[in-house]
Image (cartoon, rainbow, N blue to C red; front, side, top):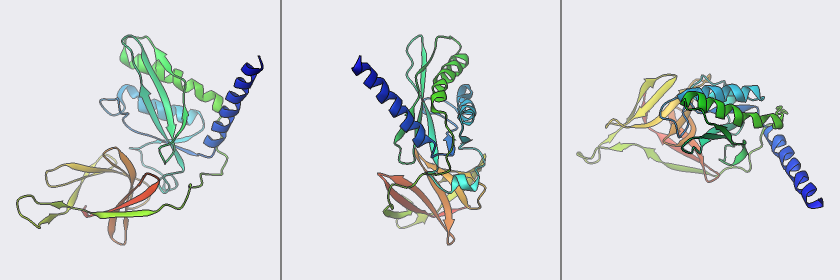
Length: 242
């Protein structure tokens, strides 16, 4: 009996610690497409996730939204929202995972399930069930914010340029093509290397390079892509024409 009570006490304590950690976060960033989805906002999962995060106390944005400068200026002032699926043949199952800017898991929801045959209805029901476990967090932003773990070491990479494979020593600058709420940065193939999304701050973008998330900005008339890799801040200088 004492062992059972000890386990219950430990679970309650762990839950309270997690909730307290999450109270340091004001914002939540939801991707416009989850890794298992075939298209943006499939089954409205991304829009619903944003709505649920707002319901449970976070000021929430999709990565395709116009972002306020306070949100965009710091990678570590927000939780990063992900939804993962673990479907079986007859059951749709999802969990909601919250991570910090170091890609460490802060919270994983209970598993939401649905046996509905219609995909839209099934994913919506499962997602609602998963988010129901957020009730126990009772999230309220405490105003403290998140203190970075340590002063990052800046690792500067070489300029991102494309060398013409036919004519040696000829370098081709990258180009920016307009897309909804931002630009995609392409090379001469053309291949998309970066996607950058507008914020309310001039020449400051939320950016993705493949699966890497970071920021894309202008400094002294030069463009840079910065992101964290193994707890180190990586800064890439990018030659691009807008």
